[in-house]
Image 1 (cartoon, one colour):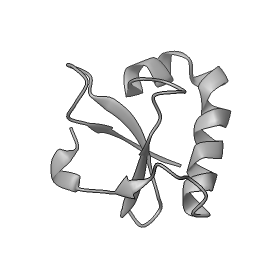
Image 2 (cartoon, rainbow, N blue to C red):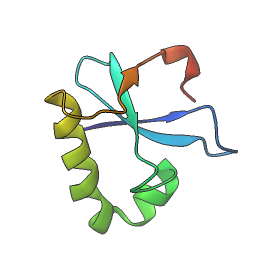
Image 3 (cartoon, one colour):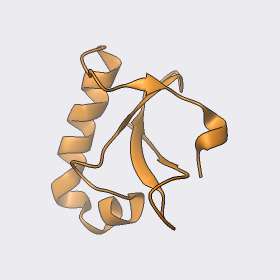
Image 4 (cartoon, rainbow, N blue to C red):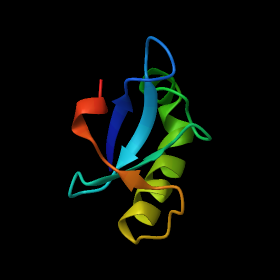
Length: 73
């Protein structure tokens, strides 16, 4: 599982899950708004983030987008 933060949504950015190739991403705001919040609640959010990652890898996430590394924090 790969995580990143977009430069949007405030000081801490917006948490996204990124595919293995670093070419696609999906916002994880329904799970944790920021990476900091995800780390603070890791035990409960990690399985959900991993499921989102697996869905992204399989091409089953409808709101995935092309990753622009210049927009990452």
